[in-house]
Length: 479
Image (cartoon, rainbow, N blue to C red; front, side):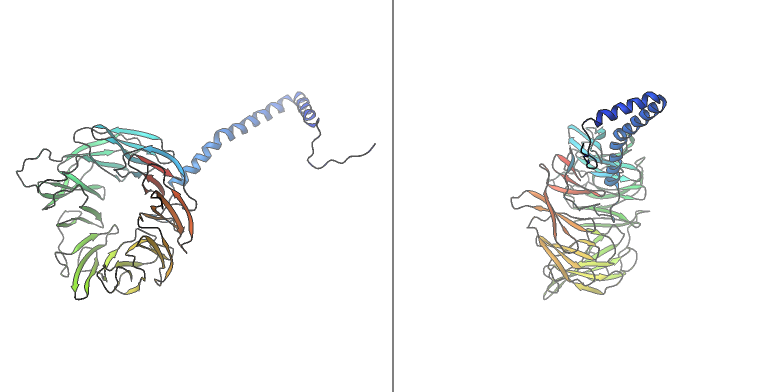
């Protein structure tokens, strides 16, 4: 006889059946233990089958709804995003995220127009609220207000008609409906009416501020959203013919409310609605903006022999400015707040800076640097880099010195810019004209990836910490 050695792990042809026979024999000798072992095996199998998908779903929900590195950033741009889900919506109304629900509008006025609540993770419809035909649901302006959802629904302002004057006959007074909803299930908590064509909304504390236009008058009201009661209102004559083009902006921050557009600027105390006086250094023709952080910016233009330049005063809106910078203040689209810089850009006729960005130390008028590239917009200020946009491309500069580190060209159709703190994504058109999303490294501008937007979508929006592609009739989650 000859001894044959088996490799470790090698199984003889009859080992399986033999093992099964031994297992049956063991079970026959110890039936109680065999039954217990079978119960444990079934329980483990059920755990894998049932708990596995639930665990995966919980992981996805945590990733989708989790915070990004800083406010305004995307959670991750490490990998090129793909389509997670797609739903039909009215792309003319911007969707918004409230908790874990995306609120969007579907249908058209007179054809089943409604609000829908979509699960942000899976895209499933949680609720649907039909909008009444009266008032005409052309304009839909929604915003989260504490834990509630507040929507103003009404007719669009006339697009082409003479200036409204008191006593002029009109087919519609522009009355809108104010709805307060529970965003989790779409239930209506209250309904009330707002007179006039509503052109913008803002939040002041737990109240809603609305700007309306009717009869040649711009009106700003602070409302109790639960009852629709007016806490205060301020009016001023305005000569613009239509507000449907979004020429009136409304911002509420740091105890102030600013309504600005065309020939009217109202800076109000958010608690009382009283108009605040201009500081001594301000002029009636100054361009006025209120930033989300409460900084009031007044910009005045000056004519010189060698061109036109601008000077921006920064203040709290109460008293004299705390800083004055040369140029038009430029707020970064996304910032992690670590650079401590304030940015301003000179106009094209400003021979001193020629559309380039200047950086100033916050709290002073001391210029830190002047960018070399003629790119007048600040897209990103994060992680030691300031990304400028202009001329169909992006330029990354060192936040401390203003020295150019990298540049990337994307053609003349450059759109929105997003960041996760490590990479920068930008929407633009490919060589064949189709919309794409490309990403580069925030640190050195190295190309990371490029993907085409889903068919039927034309732009990218950020909701929470995630990106979505939006078209005229579709919303697509990008993951």
